[in-house]
Length: 396
Image (cartoon, rainbow, N blue to C red):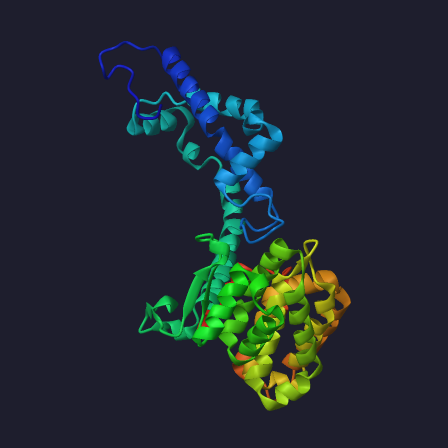
């Protein structure tokens, strides 16, 4: 092994014996870690989220995945592909016969020259680019997730204030399962908190149409809640389906969404904040609700229509609507394009035309529109260069 001196303890151990010992240690190590390696690869290949909240996710945890693989494929599944991996481990263990780090450096330099220290540099440099891209992409995604989960009201003087400390907040676990789904709701009175809590735990004990109306009403008033209400609606739908095999809540929710959709122009004229909250809410519902692991077709055109309205010149002159348009396209744009690519093309024609408006657009609105145009052009991904440019511009 690296740094191992076979003569340090007074024994005269040959290089062959050291190589054999290294090979055996590599073999044993590979045998022990192979199950974890198999689980890791299964996680990487799974398209669905690694979460219990996603009913289509086959794996959602290390222990659960281990049990699932054992039940379906037997114990040998944990050592699939083990032989080629063993050949790698044995060979790798056998060639580590340097005595010390200094010995390794001197020997390599004498036998192969200074360029030996730069072997593999080219593929490493090539690998840096996707690595950096993923790093910036994940940073952007996590940043958005943090801002979604912890709005500006939850921060003060650089310190994060837990919503659980607010006297108007309520949090609980769904179906009594700790750490599965936790919901934090602000500005609900005690009776409403109890109603929602019961709907999540025992949906058959409450009027689910009333629950749907309560959630929609509050979403139209509270933009922070509208960003997370879809997750709660999904949990109630799941709970009702498991308990009674019915869809009273979903039917009531979709009916109310349709009513607000039909009156969307009146809502926008009455309250710009209410309109932005509605668009955020319906996109959130579209993102969470699934039928056979596909977005609900009934919501595709209404969501598109709302985004088209946000892309009109009079809406683009208002930063609140531009911000809403860009945020929702970041969230559901790729899904929408898969469902109806032609309408997405038409929407981006409007966005490009709006970007070229001679007057009426603020510099922030122009920046946001340009960012979403490039975001879609890059396959609904943020390139490192775009991230550096747009996010530094916004922060400045």
